[in-house]
Figure 1: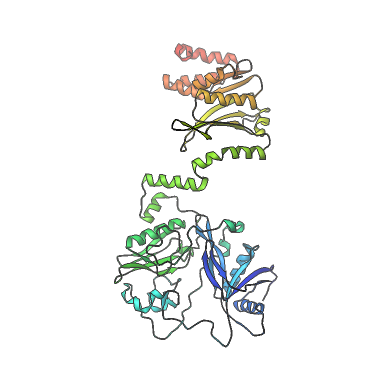
Figure 2: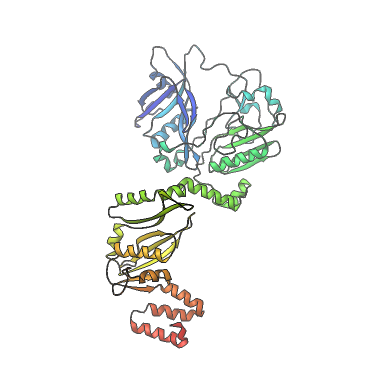
Length: 541
């Protein structure tokens, strides 16, 4: 029965009760059995193993055995789902999955336990419930149904008003076993199964069989046989929401005024998910009649081809809806703007704690409610920071720094100011950063003063910038520390060439200007400038 595989810890729940919680399916019983064993190769061996661990003098009969396994629900959400063991192949796959992916986890099994002198389950009730795994294209006859006592609303007394033809349930009770649940090939198991965070895996909306209509309009629960929709439009919307929530795409197999049948687009790759909803004409609502399997395609994201997605879901959202959805997604991933501003001091203190020597200067300003000053609150104004590795590296860089700003496009805007240096291999090295409200003289003075004081105290530096008047005013301030001979100011040739081209509209003369700026000596510089002066004295003014 056992191989040379490592031992596996198994927890068996005899005559279990199954519940749906935040993490999916869970088992409950009064006396679960915990033991360690090696892998079993057949279903009969597994049943014998469970029977031997039950204890007692009398022999117990082991009926149906099932296990629970983490399955992806879309959008990074995982949930435990029930898988029944219906053959030897299922047993081998189960042990392979736990041996390769969840070797550190306890294997949870459920088992129906009884005596040989009495049946394991009460006689079946004559209720027709669709088999989950019926083949596509088969007629909806009684051969596609199994007996189940959990859906009394699908009894023979209420099936005469179903628009899809059905074979009446015979008077002789019989069981039709469902085919096995689809189990993904072990070679196709994604790598992220090897590092699962069980505490973080949850589903937003656990399934509750409340009997409410239009139950899946938020896409947060699985489809179940017997659930109802008020209209065909509600069916279409429910399927769209479910597919978007699961990051799965579907194709419509059949759609008319009486029924709606869809399946996963990855059906040819082995995914067995499908859904059939039909109109019950006498009762005036639509009802889920068949759910075929679960998604095993493990699609991490939906298609990024927006036209294909719109054609698939028959829905073209407006620009405002897409923008609003993006803002909600940003808030879910990163948090709300107001809350994150409150985290700025903690972030800076954490940087100092983990990167000793980190420099930061945080400025806040008073907060007013109308014309009243609120004493216990302050408002973010500006922040400067630099890392000790940047300060140390600049000592070995070329003696110049380039400064520029970049506008931020969040809710509250702002500008990111940055200073970069260049090493001997012409690699760019960022050395200082600041976030300010705008590129004003005050903001540039705040940034350049702290840059000079904390990062670049060396003499003889060259500061390169665009022709911003705010930068020029900040560098010219009496207390800036950027006056000759300690520092010099120059402009980006790219900005100068762009302005030159805008004014004089001459590509050839623009090249002369660039060559003058890159001349390695003064003689070469003067030669190019004389050429420009001969074309037009205004070009060199």
